[in-house]
Length: 502
Image (cartoon, rainbow, N blue to C red; front, side):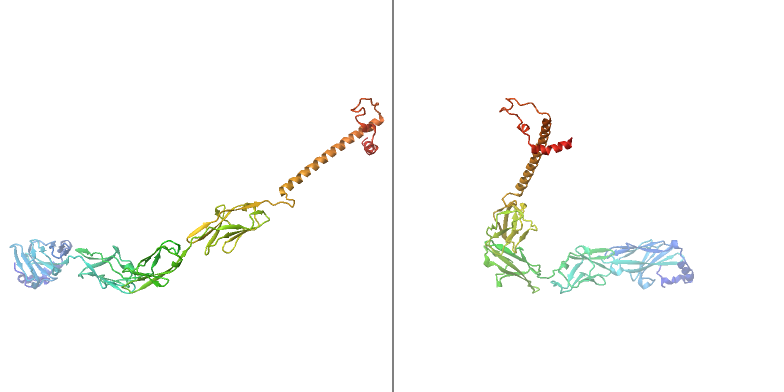
């Protein structure tokens, strides 16, 4: 079968021009279920691989096939033709030597290239010289190589330089993706992506932008990821820190100071002591310090790339150890509710602080206690019994402390003018009252007894008793002489009452 001599989109064959109307009618009225189609296998091909343009739903009674490069039937773009009965294959001007046509109309591309990307048209002609044509697409993509990242600056300076990172190489039909520390890019006004995402700009760069950065490239047939890329951001120095934080030292100890400042590249350090330059070093060591080593210590940090300098000053005070204090009392023995006492902490040290202790515990001040400025004296006015006990004072400076021996305060109970205590006086008064009560009870008893005797004497005057005989009583007299010689005064007082009683 010879190749067509006219464009296939017109459906015209040289020896069958009279069937033009019939072929066009057949072409445009194919049933949906029998529609001729082309499938690319695989749909997206990697360069260098093989791709098959597979034909589906071929009509029956076919005579042959024609393949063209492009979207129309054009003999100048014919690749190959195939006559089914004779199995004759005819190569066209667009044949590259890598195409193979199969009896079922499918076309195989071997070792495909990017130039093979595009549309391909199949023209199928039956034995009645009716033609059908269909167009398919071949997509070829480059097998992506491993990308890499480049930067516009090798040593960008913090807060000064913008940095542009580029994902290389630039490849057509490729998607670019950026990662920071294996995470997606954060939302930031300082991070800007180009339209195709191939470049990442940092405006401006900071020390926190070191990364690492990675870029990914993707297309339908492959993907690649770069090695991590770390930015070397120059910054600092920040204000240096002097350690340890202590500012007070005891005489005779060693002074060891270290200086540290955030900086890239690492800072260079030097010291000034009271304005005097010292040997450049990061650590300063002075053994067996004295009061002459007190003063200002300045650390200077320098960045050789940024040219910046930062300093920090620390004041060091060297102190003597404090001596043991003592307590002086205005009166060690005092009377409660009456006396006041003033305790004074005695020390020869200067620049110290003082605190008071009571029974080995921090003294809790009451409204009766008052401390002088500097706490050197403690006044208790008035004292109470609960104030009795041991008092101590502690003197201290930032590097040492010392506590006095206890001073014991004796608080006595309040006494009356005779030297007796209130309890003694109260006891005496109660005793007197008891004696008075007992005396009154005894007097009343004697009074009642006399009353009875007086009543008995009155009866004897009316009925005289018989004369007493010798031997009565211890002396031969009556045992009741008052009855023999009645007291008329008593009777005079009693008779009327007896009369009243009768």
